[in-house]
Image (cartoon, rainbow over all chains, first blue to last red; front, side, top):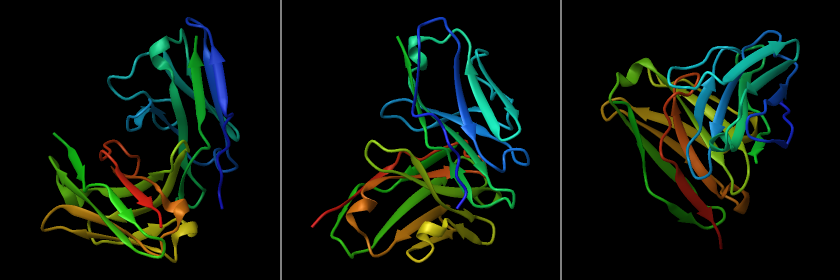
Amino acid sequence: SYELTQPPSVSVSPGQTARITCSGDALPKTYAYWYQQKSGQVPVLVIYEDTKRPSGIPERFSGASSGTVATLSISGAQVEDEADFYCFSTDSSGTPYVFGTGTKLTVL
Amino acid sequence: QVQLVQSGAEVKKPGASVKISCKASGYTFSRYYMHWVRQAPGQGLEWMGIINANGGSTKYAQKFQDRVIMTRDTSTSTVYLELNSLRSEDTAVYYCARDKVPDYWGQGTLVTVSS
């Protein structure tokens, strides 16, 4: 079955840039989406179609994709950005959908 | 405003079945797909499947193919997730989430499987 691989954890100091990667064989052909899930809350979409930011999401969140790796960047990370982040995509046939393994972002 | 309201927590014994509901409001129900996603305690998000509210066609993750049934009732704008042959590893919060790229999520339903 198709898998999306993320690092288990990323840690940065406030004000630094956090980068979270997502690796998947189909990413050259499919879009990556990114969700932020704070403790005890439902996931929130922060990046769609590799690079686009939904309304209401701070500009410090950005996305990029190159080859088999998609990257979520948070420039000037803030303590309030601490959360688990998941990439989301499909295999090249369009289904099934899959979430990445998840990355815990610590900002301190 | 868009709302997805899920049914309450369930406690089941191993081998039993559970059926969770997700009632949608604030949008045209039949125009959107609905995912089901689960999250075991302390674990990541796991995609289970998707249903097209217009017509009811479904796609399931291979892992659940033999045990899951997703249905919808257009008269009540409700989608259902039925999971059979429950085991302890199915203990999780189950979410419904609207659209092919989930934008709105239900509040989650905790299913506990324990003897």
